[in-house]
Image (cartoon, rainbow, N blue to C red; front, top):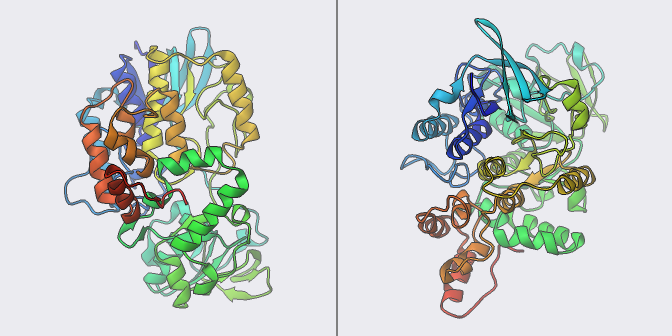
Amino acid sequence: MDVDVIVVGAGMAGLVNARWLRACGFEVLVLESHEDLGGQWNRDNPNSGVWPAMRTNTAKFLTRFSDLDYDEGTAMFPRNGEVLEMLRRYVEAFGLGPSLRFGCRVVAVERRDEGYEVRWRDDEGEHAVVAPRVVVASGRYNLPDVPPIEGLESFSGAGGVSHAFRYKDPDRYRGQTVVVCGGSISALEIASDLAMIGAEVHLAQRRQRYVMPKMVAGTPIESYVFSRSWALAQQELPVEEVHRITAERVLRLGGDPVRYGAPAPHEDIARAGVTGSPHYLNLVAEDRVTPHPWVRCVDGGRVEFTDGASVDADAVVVATGFHLNLPFLSEGIRRTVRLTPTSMEVADFTFHADLPGFAVAGLWSQLGPYAVPLEQQARYIAYTWSGAVPAASEERLRTAALRSVEEGHYEGYREQHEMAIRFGRLAAVDPEDVDDPELAVVLPLATVTADTFRLVGPDADPAARDRVLRDFRRYGTPEDRAAAREALDGRAVEPTSTG
């Protein structure tokens, strides 16, 4: 089998990498363990944590690639099946089907003189191919992290203990008393979901985060928090000023959780953290979700919290995140990238100086939709290997890998606009200087969309300009749209997306 690049995984990251690698002339083989494509967005995939009624928590104009939109009439927050269908159309549009192999569980990726040997198992046995390049795009959210809680393994409630990753049948909790453990998006979504189907819900958190809604007065929250101007400002402003502006914005858009009856977050927003949920705080205010501090211990069916309160529970759902899950990497590769359950040492989330032809894609944790950064990272990989952009020097890769440790690239959450611009610059497609008066005004105010990165550089699309302007008119904040109109009329006013 003559293959230039092997891609591990046919989810969103794997498919967009295959699309751009093929566009750059590479022969690509995509190996997917499930019998179908889609990764997390295919709820029948054992490696998916999506439940049947789940919708995206990100707006549709950011939950897509630059080449394909959702069908007309799709709601602002698509159903999981609609995202899957969009990915199927993506495969068809770019002729990716012949590159895909399903039911292929990768068991090893090892260095060889001529590149990388990838071994996988399917119904016919074990197979191996050596290729000069490999992209690991196997997903960030498929190995649950269950924290040590005294007595949890012997919990005796009728509903048992499960991780959010296995939350597939909410109806089975109807009428039960459920303790949900965690304080980020998945925990709040599951707690809200259960409360609205009639469960008695108790939420145990290590800390109360600030909570942002999905929309504000009909505008997606991303339009307020993921603008280009704010991403660039965060790179220039002192950290303290960034935190101050963030705190003001969060309180303005999401409110103080205390006013809803939730615990008080830490006064330092960097320590408190920010998450999102359209329902959680309102359900707390309605006494349909009861917040608690963290769990001290479990005794039979009784769950005791660190403040001494306790509840007799029928079920416990643990929503406490995921470990990196790359069991197929050889010991040599694992040592090279210093892989741990929570981190790895690679340059710009992608390459390593000592592993030429090896890339990882989409393995960071992030606030906001992944599609836009994933596409720019895929272009960075494809353009680097094809020579469309100059490859980074060994010195730069080593420096960037060390910086990844200093900045804790895999330990916290990155932000959508930050990651998209990072990869856009690396792929030489970031529109830093646009010779277009209207775009020069709109781009700093607009949310960072996939079409932003089709304006300049390799594979620029003449139609991208109209799509960028269309999305700004549809989804931009009222204040930013007014600021753009005033600026274009020669009367600049202060926008809201930077503070």
